[in-house]
Structures are given as structure tokens and as C-alpha cells.
Length: 142
Image (cartoon, rainbow, N blue to C red; front, top):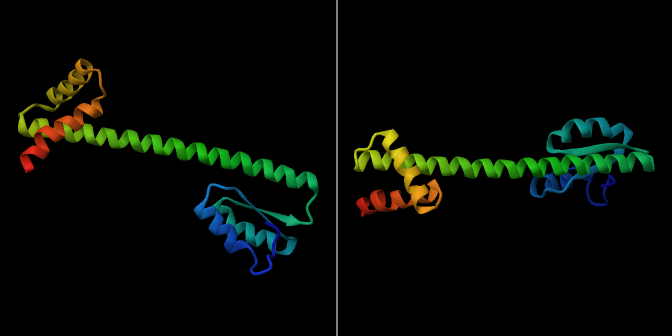
């Protein structure tokens, strides 16, 4: 984005783009504004380059921004994967508690039960845990 824009300076648009998309944002500003803008916008992943800018520096900034964007997208994917795994662990622990409460299993017995059922049924521990919760917990509540 080459600032200033016709209807605004451009920093608000850059912030909006940064907040609502995974697109990288490169703001080109006059040298006297670049440092202050960079200090304010760098926490949002917005790169600020001072004008005048050479063609080589411009393309280097674009490559750096693209590499950073790919890294952030990779981290976001990893975060989603870890969050899913954490949710699965919570469900499995909830199923263990249900087995402990309704069948008077120890925690170790509940753990072994879920693992054995998963192996015997050739399914995941998560699927077994969901079945346990539906069978014992949800049926008892109704």
C-alpha cells in the first residue's frame, strides 16, 4: 500500500487487512512517517518501508513479508492441530471420570478400558470416549 491513500492515510486499512485476513501487508510511507508507523504497526505484522524505495528493496521486502506470512500460516495450522488434540484429551478424561463415577473404576482401570476398547474395535480412543459418555453420562441425565 502506497500511502497516503486518496480517502485516508492507509494505516487503518492496513490494520483492518491484518486483523481480518492472512494476507501480508506492506505499507510504503514517506521517510519522516516510516519509523513512527513501523513502531505502531509492527506488532500487527505490518511491514513499513520508507519512500523513496528501490526496486530491489521493494522485492526483498515482498519476499520477506511472504516468508513471514507462510510461517504464521504454518503456526496457525499447528495451533489448530494442537487445540484439536487438547480437546480430544479432555473428552477422554471426561470419559474416564464417567467410568469412575458409574462403574466405580479406578483411573488406571478406566484408562486401560478405553485403550482396550479402542484396540478391540479398531477405532480411536476419542471415539470410545464419546461412546462411553453417550452411554453412561447422557443416558443417566435424561
